[in-house]
Length: 468
Image (cartoon, rainbow, N blue to C red; front, side, top):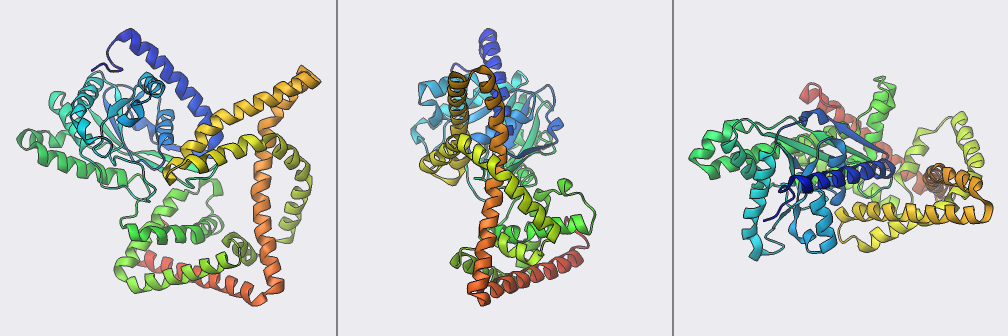
């Protein structure tokens, strides 16, 4: 088997291709996401063999994020189906990818995984970084699925030949909003999982040792993400996050004195998961009653086309000075919004349309939108700048080019704010036409938040302090 690791000259060329792709990816990730929070990248050493075990919530973007987060080149194990097209295969091999054959793709080619393990062994022997997605596939669940044994087999095979050399690092990817443009994402590198303690057991009983190390890797990966143990609790956790996580953040700011920018939404989500698990085990009937109440409130919101944010804003009763400031900003920003929307509409809308048409599952959406954006923005911006240059000259074209990203950011923020305003106006109209419904919405939200506060106090008392 010819791999990306065979010839030094070819490897140098591939490394240069990888560095170029990584530089371009870093720019587009900065553009696409509001923030990419990378935690403990120093746990990946500057030299020596490393095996990264990563959860897989968002398809191709996962590899771009991890590759952009660390300095070293990463050789990803990618499903062999991606190598069927010649151009795609050439690009993947240039980036150092190694094909892996999954039973669900082609059970007749599973024996070729011998070549995959050999390529991984060669890469680790040369002190390179291998990345594997042990879950085996992408998924949209707020949990780490039961992982396969491939990572443990690779790690223990290398450990048997090179004792103590390998660093096995769990990596957690958590997306604040999977489909949203300008969302937040966390890339968390966990403490290394010791492999050496399993070496002697591997010599005596390889199957048992592989299973034991696989379980240890599973636990380590779960510690780096927002992990919900039971699938049937996922919806409840997400509902509590939607209704209450911002409230917790505001409490930390107003009562705890924590600056808003320093509040960790992932830590809050983990605390919510812990509290939900606590009460599901201790008082499942109470959890069920709360879930039914939340479902009733959400049904009311859907029936009258009102968003929870509008009800929350009504209960917050913003100060007059803030209302005046937001109103003034809306008036002043309208011309900028009109300009930014007109010159950025197509490169913003076409990736959304493409993702909706092409994504077969939720985990594909962000990848399609990201890749379409990489094409759409340079194409449309370049065409617009060229037209301005032809009509008005180079100086105007330069000024126009500089205005494109700034006006686009202003237009996007204005559009988000306008969406909130529309929802609040809809609630105001509902208050005038069906006051009893508006009162019921606010009363239901208040009752749910009151129950959350009561549960939080009990959880803190039961656990003698927590990650809240």
